Image 1 (tube, each protein chain N blue to C red):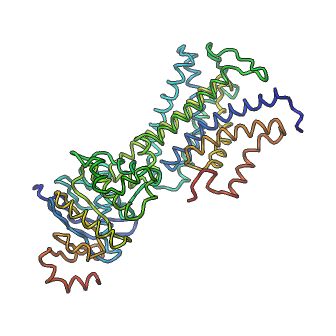
Image 2: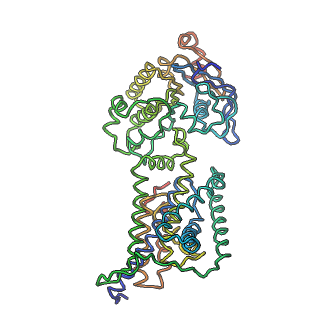
Image 3: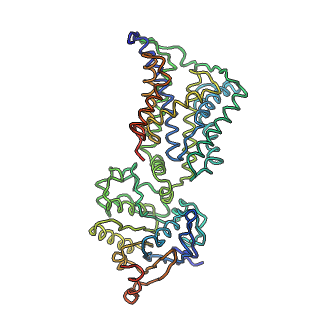
Length: 292
Length: 235
């Protein structure tokens, strides 16, 4: 069982870190959205896919390259999210969780359906930017530059978001609103606007992940629904609404998944769900969540 | 419209879903005045306070703050008219440090007290500035809830049960703070169960029962109306 090469070991560690980086950004977005809006954003995967497609459209139709797309795509999808929040999600305030779940799930189906109608399910390829072509032979393994960049970029963005939430005034508004929106608002904080911006930010993070993913995976209308199921499991394990929890559990579950692929490949697709089941039995609020 | 009244409530009805909790409240508070809302548990004191902040399900009638109608305003705009609210549950955020709690509310209008002035007024808070807000004692949390709204420049303070569950020595200290704020010219509306605490501080009292104002007593009438008050409040 354990007769694998160091080459394979580090290879899987890298794949695990890459996947973990995507899990971390996506679950971070879900966590801040859930914290303030109390909505489990089932359209997260579709918006991640939209992020990748915006980069693809930019390159194909307008000649806009990877680096500008890394900024523009999250902005465009973020604005789309703001519109969704103002027109639709805002009306669900005070209703049961189920309504938010149904609405965002329906949106995901619509968005995905539209892209599927136009592009089918065979993916479009997106090139690795010139600057990050090639890789580095570390001796024990080969590290493609782009993959290294994805890990660094994802973790930097996660840390930046954590810093904004935990260490700035805007973040204090967000934490207060998450803890008790009614009191925060009656103290003068414009909670409705904060809510809109938070949804926009969460969605922009998904789009950012989508652009990062475009050169690694294909740009594909179903790429979102493939990853989002795992991301929901990650969020459940980390604890709904916990910022640091979603980052740490995202990265570590990616790595665990990678190692499982090495030791017992057949289990790699289910290992995260097994962990989720165990966590739910032992700590229903998640590893980093506070018990309700 | 005279703006002599900092707060003027007329014909206020409030509802939480199906339940009708206030049945036509009429109250006014003049600038610089300290007025209490007395009444038994469940009489509608806190609902009146929450209605002023726009936190009940639905409200009908009129609530004028500094002459401005607020019945259709969202809570954050009401706060920004200069209304500082101390919630009954104190509303200290556990995910924020003491200092972050203190600095949280955006400035409402004019110059509020600075953080340094507030630390001077409430030295305990300074010592514990980096502790999470809810790690403070009940009394300290109450001081924090009061200090927090003083920083915003709010000049109308709406204080909901600020002595509830606190030791007599802390209640005495809060009494001193309220007296000091009155001398500084703040307008205050105080929902209070503790009549002994409220009686010597207030200019006027309203007694609320079943969502109505059933009695209004000025400070100088207290002695004469004590019998009736006892009957209503069961003190």
